[in-house]
Length: 400
Length: 82
Image 1 (cartoon, rainbow over the protein chains, first blue to last red):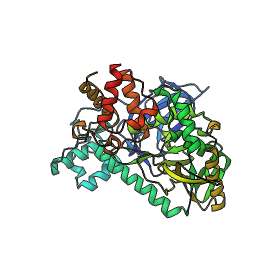
Image 2 (cartoon, each protein chain N blue to C red):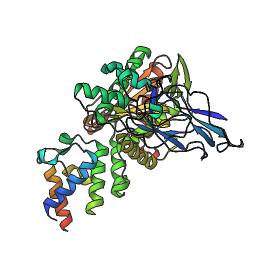
Image 3 (tube, rainbow over the protein chains, first blue to last red):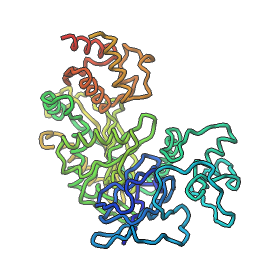
Image 4 (cartoon, rainbow over the protein chains, first blue to last red):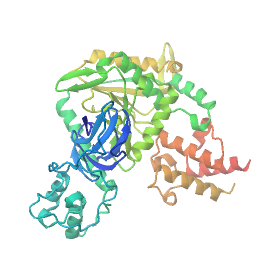
């Protein structure tokens, strides 16, 4: 028997709110299966389970807002007899916000019977926090959550009643855009402040001629149907991944001052959201994927990020981040490392520039390539070799 | 193909990429990507969406001609007529 806990969802995303279960007691699951959808400030995240077995019971209810590390479900491991049907109901009072009963998909009706006077009131931490912020008196609220627990929606409703601002929130649903945008801003602020506080950044930049890559791409895309075309971004991602594999001190996590290099390269791709905000989910095993797979993966990742639908592993597993300003941007970006990663690679806007090669001066597309890296783990010399290797790889686009 | 029909199709595809954009508020003669903030991926998705709805092949070498909304309408209307 093992407990599956809410996994890490990336730096400074330390809580999640259960939106729905994708499994029920008795279901057989294998490693990587999505067992639940959890709302965070950045996305509604599909939570994948880390081991195989049979779901014994579910420990959370939809609507519960809990910290990372909270037990979510109990799993009978493979080979262990599952006792779902015969297990007697748990009699001890579950800890606050935890539930042992299978979760109903639909929230109970509003104005459920108030809890017995003797019972401890169940108030989710998020609801308590919002109540403080909004000046809502929790004692005057009728909880509509499981066991008449006071949910964040109850607090928001009460807050709206007193301020005449009606929040359009369903009983159990994803947060509305405006609330998510402000929560996301706070999450980004926390992660970036931590980065600037803890990580001694050093910065390098170089210019990369893109003539060969541009010509190669034009030829490749001319033969491809519109649905299979590749963007320059895919070449940048692949070159960065291959270079990260060769320079392991750029690829991994630094926690409590100790660096752990990773053998797999999962390039986090910074994706801006139209309504503001930023998410940098991982393209898993980037270095071993052909360009076509990277392009398909990138297309899918951008689509899902903007639809707020990501996997937990995509948020917790990027081993370094790439930011690509693209054609609408400016020439140079100097990034902020996303902790606990140790490097951020930036590509600016490609521009046509006068370029000297040998004794000739020509007009070619050029892009600035930059690195922000962690001085606790590497120094400028290695960082420079890393960038030079990316530049070199982009001169041989057919090998990517 | 009627340019008005083409325009409606562009609006439909654009709505899937940039839902906040109202085509009527755009300057049809000014660069589209500056007004709507379409990155390379957005622009490719626009081209793919137009290709799927209108069955028109849009080679990458023609992208440079597709700057404004008017350019796009004229290009697609002419291609659809063939």
